[in-house]
Length: 338
Image (tube, rainbow, N blue to C red; front, side, top):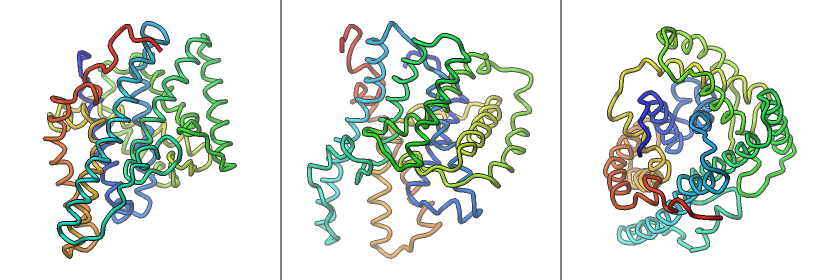
């Protein structure tokens, strides 16, 4: 990518994607360490991604150009990873047949599940991309039509309240649009942070670690279960106040950190990890359990390490041979029209 990388942003993305991978391998893993740790981590694990996307929001050259870029960077990888996962599951079905394990369903109808229902059998983590696409388009419309900052923030709050009301009443909109309404404030927070110039180093950055340590106490004590995918939400103030506190203090704490090449590499290509990690952890977990390793901390850590190691050649292969499908080069070139 031509844009200069910001090391601490890549570090934050790496931290988030590693937590996401670990959570997907074993939903209960973090609670083995502390009873409410998973809920505390959920306060920023996915909201942080919306926040980072908001930091880099631009209007570009109008709606058509903006949409082209978001299609290239979000929707094209979304479709590509759905197809890739289906192909690899066909391979897994053959391997299961060879070792005499239970077969898996590879009905092609699975390819259209992400477009017509909330739960997808194999590619569930990709819901975030669909939601992020709508958040970008929604904020583009708000930003173009509403100029005063106070009015923009009021509209953001109103839309989040509407999304929260939908969740409370168990009303789900198609294509993750309801989740996008709830997630919009996290995105707007990132946009606001960029407006303040906070991305630049300051003499106050050294206090970020202390701020994060202090914030960790209320975040741990008061966080409740949060699932943006299925719109299982805590009380409204916990939905935003605690994630905002977690996001801002983590952002602050990461700013003075030195560049760690491997972590930054994972962060830079976290989109690829998001789209491909089920390809590895699902069969790895199955194989270890099939051959006698009991589910638990050891199995989770082994599968996590192997999954992240396998992501290294996967990142290289996809960015080298399929760059237009993983947001490394534009799929639709400038001049493309809706």
